Image 1 (cartoon, helix red, strand yellow):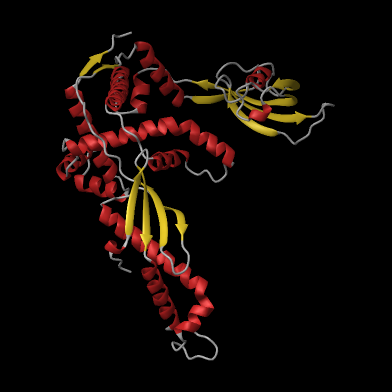
Image 2 (cartoon, rainbow, N blue to C red; image 1 turned 180 degrees about the vertical axis):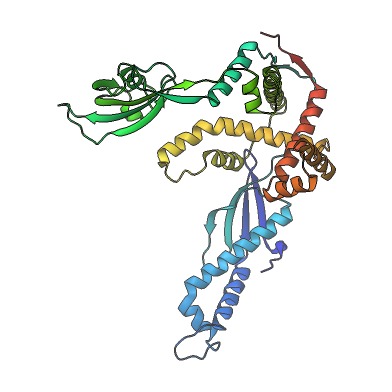
Length: 425
């Protein structure tokens, strides 16, 4: 239905954090007219005994369905009045309207209030003159050696050993059976494979396994550590029977040119080492940039304080939490309270970046996206049209646009402030 907004009484209460409460009064005459309209529409399609379809008198409909008709009329009026009032007040809610304080008595005015959040207005008073320290990027030989060692392990082969006790980094197969107070099994036992020293099992289990020879079985008292995932078992103890059924040691390939050729397009170990260092340096540079960006954003938010609508924080928190259907309400409330400060901080950053992009005209253009697609295609030795089609199919064009916009914003912000390099450690 179309309501004439001039017939309504509208007032807006401005509350904190961009919360608004709209109070609306609809004259009794309009409510009654809508009730009659609803009754007439129902009469035209109703089937009642003693009357032909579409020939039921309106009065009969009103007497028979008065409560339902009134509710239908009120729902229609409230929705229409809210829409017209928003347009008249030039308000654009960012949250669903929440109906409050509905008051209606037949043949009297209808009054109600609807609460909602609006987009925050951010005034950017200061965007320049900050000093931010960027972490130093220093990839040591030891760090490179650690990556090369992992490459060795990834290309190693587990060799079975028929005797002897396990040592650090051995892969063992064990069967663990829980025992009762008399030392009798309470279950059939479960089989596990774990690498000694990797944290796959609690310390007492690993320590017990280290005492066994291959093929040996023994009983042990084990205690659950204070950081055990199941809180109810922390500090608890129980007796178990452990059988060491198999033991394997890693046979590592030599760290040489042959390994370099095996793992990639490298002719020598030196080429592989150089590539590892380049990749690590690139990743460390990206992390250092991320830290500098984060520090700069925090300073800008501090210099340009603003409130965030509660609905935006709630939506962001829900995105972090994911499916919470199995979490008890008490724990869920506790979790929301825990993540709220970080959620509010994250939302402020998002809004700040969007505002800077808008005020400084830094939003990514179609040409910017096309250029980035060309770069991706060139790096992967493929066709730009295919890259674009793949990104579009995966729904990633929008995220690419955001990525380019953010880069433009931070390039702009870095030019406005002093970015220093932290001393190398």
